[in-house]
Length: 521
Image (cartoon, rainbow, N blue to C red):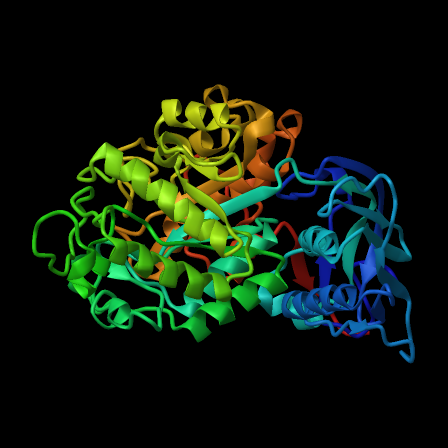
């Protein structure tokens, strides 16, 4: 069968020459060797997976589902009884020494087969994202008329630059639904991001059910910035999100921000309050006015309950305690507080993460500082032997405006256009040693956004660049090359109904494949 045509079809698709090296893969793989032919994906293709690991079969089923949604082809998984098989996709568990990390994978694509090797199902899942990106994007009206989908042949060797590649979503200033968060998870997973940090509590809202302290959501979850109704995740909702993310080999990291950013908690239970004022529900955007009472035993009993309940439904190894902008907490009280809360987090088997201010406390080297603002704090974390998560506001904050014409966002740290978001080196940022860097995270604060469309406007396309900054090695990153690949993400983003910001710095492409009507034979 010739690629691009089949008898008795009403359209002929004109596919360009297949060259794997020129495909618009993001993040860019470590090594690509093109052989300039194509594997023909069609209705006779079948997926087979290693029989020794059921998780590999789940990866195969996930790929089959995504092929169906993209191409309208039904590709069977581990169905040896298929009547006609002309091409095989084999997802193989391999012990190759060339697979140097749990997320590493190899792709070998010939005219007859696609072989994906990985040591773990997690590595296989990263590999199928590459396969998904290699399948052409065409307009929706073409799907039922396209008999065969060419996947470029060649070899890919790939593994991540950083083990932690994340984004943060603030659901406290404005609440986002389970369905909204699931959509964000799907989009992040496509670009090999493996961590979603949920900022669950702040002055304006408490968004996670704590059964031992029910007023947190009854009162503290009742509003949001601008005075809308707010909302919260039940523990069942949260478990649903955790499971959904886990199916995509993504961890969800919960954040309960404290001792500052705690007004919603203190309104719910005034006994926790430490700022000397009567707390009231807050719908504005100022920061730094709230604090827990760091010297009150009840506060630590409360925190113990919160950490215990959330840790029980959160399989991630991390628990984020916030710790930023606690301006009305006395420094001695702040240090005392962070020291005690670290012990509570460790009691429940988690590693503590905190914004870079926590490095001022007497905490252990196992805790992690998230570098957002203060270089001195980040360097103090390094002196303590801690890992550092790179999230500088002036480079990585997704809530910063693109420019003066942006419809949403802030600009207190910087304007961050698409090129500024990409052209920097996390590996060398502020002199933090490479061995101390856990990874990169792009936070999205929600003071100025209240729905999924506005979220997408700020996150996309910049978060796609952060995926490459955290997966792809520095020597493989190049703005001129990247901006072409980014422009060619438009058909995927359109298909997923993503309301991204069409930056004028990017030449946005529609499908690179054209089609024309032909007469029936």
